[in-house]
Image 1: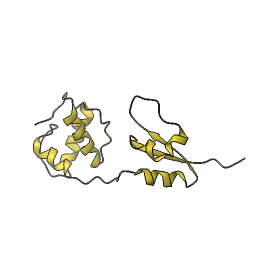
Image 2 (image 1 turned 30 degrees about the vertical axis):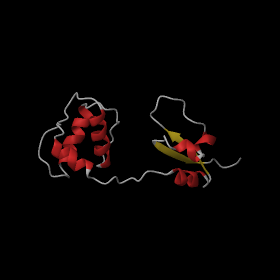
Image 3 (image 1 turned 45 degrees about the horizontal axis):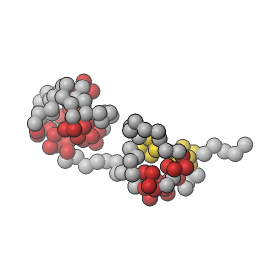
Image 4 (image 1 turned 180 degrees about the vertical axis):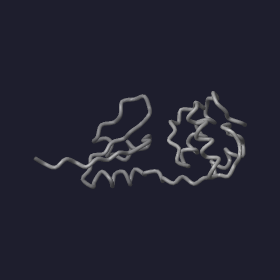
Length: 125
């Protein structure tokens, strides 16, 4: 199925996730807008696939085959990070109240996390 400008839905989200593996910085919202079209055009260069801003089956298969350069942070890994003298929290695009900093250190709180952010603790005064 060809995905193009103004398309919406789950297939577009999958395309956006895969384009991000190639270095695009797209919001995975399922809306094929100008940024997604530009990312498709950019992806065609390293993949050596001629074409326009539409995502044909060949391009979609090629970007899906690209290995994700950033492995997911597991709850055990996130817990380890939290114990290194940092203040950590979860960043999520879900429309819900984010968990507290303390809850972020509990492994069960990490399953829905889209990003785990850690900042150095400030020095005691």
